[in-house]
Amino acid sequence: MIKKLEARYSYLSDYLFINLLNTINGRNNIFTDFLEEEGLMDEWLSLMKERSLLNSEQVAKINESPIDIKKIQLFREQCRAFFLEPETKSIFLENLASNTEKAPLFFDKAFRPTPSKGGTDGLISLIAYDMLTAHHNGLFPKIKKCKSDTCYALFVDTSGRRKWCSMEVCGNRTKVRKYYAKKSEEHT
Image (cartoon, rainbow, N blue to C red; front, side):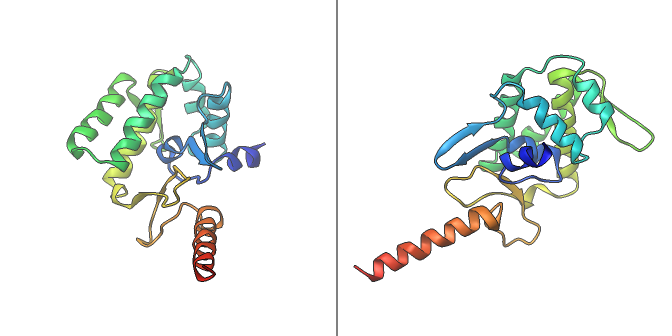
């Protein structure tokens, strides 16, 4: 089941917020928003739990109230816009921080956050906290969009030289297209 879920996404990260930002895909010139399909938010939460990005207490708290998919999509698009076309960093960070005010976080003995409310506010609060922590740790400059024209994935480039979310998928496709384009030019 989990392998099937993992196959939906072109890039899975060790960061909760990047995995939310990558709940859209554009394979074979078909745009897919994985949040729009009924039940896929629950599957996404299960996948994040399976990958140890959420724990049982966090998922249980989130599931105490309904999740408004439209609000999650809006939050996702605002965050994606920051990485694709950055606005002033301070305004974006203030907006992120204000999201944690709607469902303040409590920390257990292992310093894992759990939102005070469930549903949409709880999930957004956890994701905003994950983003703020990543910013504090200097991760934001390493987040890039895949160079493939048909891929919407954001990924963490720790080397500073990566172009694609996945060499196996996007990198190879791009290289093959360039090769055949060059080969056809040689024959004309």
